[in-house]
View 1: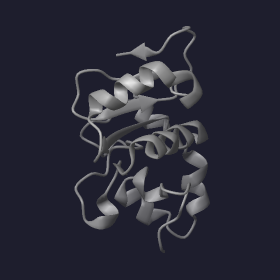
View 2: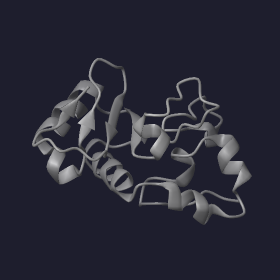
View 3: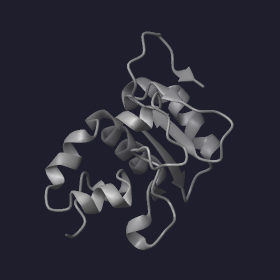
Length: 139
């Protein structure tokens, strides 16, 4: 199976761990149906603003496979993580620092549809969890 495009710049394999992707390669609609469309839209908007982004890169023989959905096989798996529910991604941007992207999200979170970011990490974690607050949740 070739790569499946979700948006102009993002592919299904960037959100799915390798073993899961290969298990469902003949039924990719199952994997697509697991994803939260709001997350994909937000990630594409960030990609449009900041250029090239890496989420999972196992497709290209990279080491990242747990930056989208995390299953119990992930060393970072948590039942309560937004990654478990396909509502979060961890991103590395090649043309912007993680702090530049976080500062942008802090201003534009509503239009991006992002409700939470993580501080103090060397990547950009953003998610689209349901959040009652009237501000961006920073964890």
